[in-house]
Image 1 (cartoon, rainbow, N blue to C red):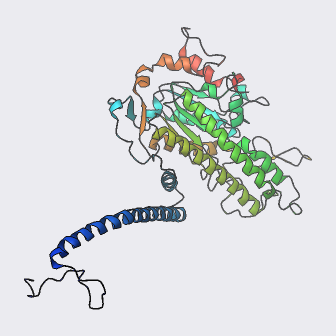
Image 2 (image 1 turned 180 degrees about the vertical axis):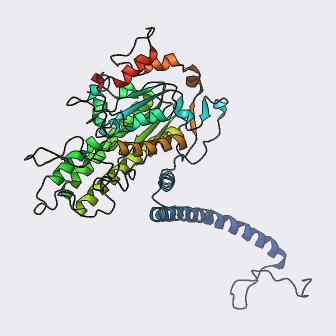
Amino acid sequence: MSARDGEPDVPEETPRPDDDSPAEDPATAGSADEETASEGAEGEGEVARPRRRRARIALVVAAALALIMVAVVAVPTTRNGLLDLWCDVTGGVCPGEPLPPITEDEEVDWRVRVEPEEAVLWGNYVALGDSYSSGDGAGDYDPLTTEPGECWRSENAYPRLIEEEFPFEGSLAFYACSSHRGSQMLEQLGTPESQLERVTEHTSLVTLGIGGNDLGFIPVLRTCIMRMPLLERTACTDQESEVDERMDRFEKTLTEVLGEIRDRAPDARVLVLGYPRLFPEDPPGMYYTLSANDQLWLNGLAERFNDRIRDTVYRADGEVYGSRQVGSVEFVNVFSSLSGHEVSEDDAWLNGIVLGQIGEGLKVDRASFHPTAQGQRSIAERVRLQIAEGPERVLYQSKERLEKVDPDVLTRELGGPLDPVHPEDGDEGDGDEVADEASREPAADS
């Protein structure tokens, strides 16, 4: 009897009046119900579990796709947003996250955590790249680098300014060279002309600005400018597919260049610079033969190229951080570093088109569209901030390497093993004099 309503308990499976099934023996009803319930539960479980599993998988996949779609639409075009998106899509270790805990095999970590400035000051500073890094266009050149085909290294170039700004334990090895390409850096490996051979084990900072010549940016500009403006309206944009192919090739080249630098200086902070915008964000009108649309297209080209460089750098640093390596690979955004002082502005920090002699017309030579001394100072400020603030992750370096570095080691390594003025181990001499000669030797970078 039910304690609540005084009626007998009715089994859930009691036949209804219109049910044709035979009545059950009350004596066996309970045991039969239990048996049926048990069998039913097992049968339903075998079917329900796969169904629930498939439903959960479908739900997870749908949710993941929805999140990716939302991220693609809503993520801001900032470093944080791009890094988060990349980490979500690849499932890699994100620079903004702590590293996994030390494993049993790593009871003692071979690395030491360092602050951003500390990470660049303990060794030599090696400056690599093309004319934007050598300071071509900024004046006050090293006289040994001003012959035709030489490197045109300026005392106003940002590597010199960075050297003055920070108290490095070592010295500056300034080997950026006008007209150099990333592909050329790889081709010259193993020769005294190689820029990459200048990077050595006790290099603490590398700055690298390369790619403009791989892209053929000056020839692209020349093609845009040296045309009949009223007749050849698509001279710029007709080059787009070819330029995109060059960008694709350069991503692979830059990946290899960064790998070579990392192999030679695993503890170094490697700062990779993009390129500045050449024309105003909102061009006021024609610049010589370049229409406002031409200028916007050229600005967009530089921005897209910077994006390729940045993404390549982020991938390289993701591998460094995710695999518990030391050092870093960082992107320095200089796209807006000349903002308000582009080529057509009254107070331009960028050289415009160089005019030839009377009768020669317009001349687009090596100094055209390159930063002036003030432009180099503005770029140096971006590099300085990156050095001071560091990447958006913690930095590690090798305890053993930091313990073994000393002034003699830094002097011996300066300029690399293939430098013509590089002293052999055990040679005696004035270390400061050797360091200065190594940083200014032009023959190795012709």
